Image (cartoon, rainbow, N blue to C red; front, side):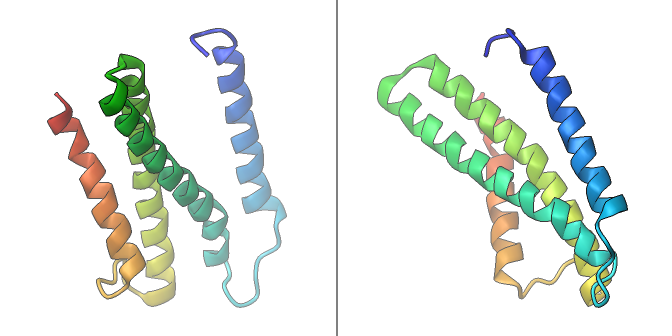
Length: 132
């Protein structure tokens, strides 16, 4: 993309995200059983999907860099992982908000999905200091 149309794409992305969030929180009816907790999933699940896809793409780009020694693959890997760590923070926060409302606790250590995502997140957080 290298700058061409990046500003317009950024503005469009923010507008679409704001429209989606406003639809979720103001237009979608409240669920009878789950209440407001259900609306957190409209945000939590897409954030988790984007984070995990970004982590995988960062790994693929890192592998491509190791095979070809091309600096573009290294830069792409860094960007994918950097953005995915930001999304991972949002995933952990929204997941903890839902867990507190549903289970009464922010974190449950016997849930394998939670612990495995935390491990993946922390492993990718260690990528930054070891990269340089």
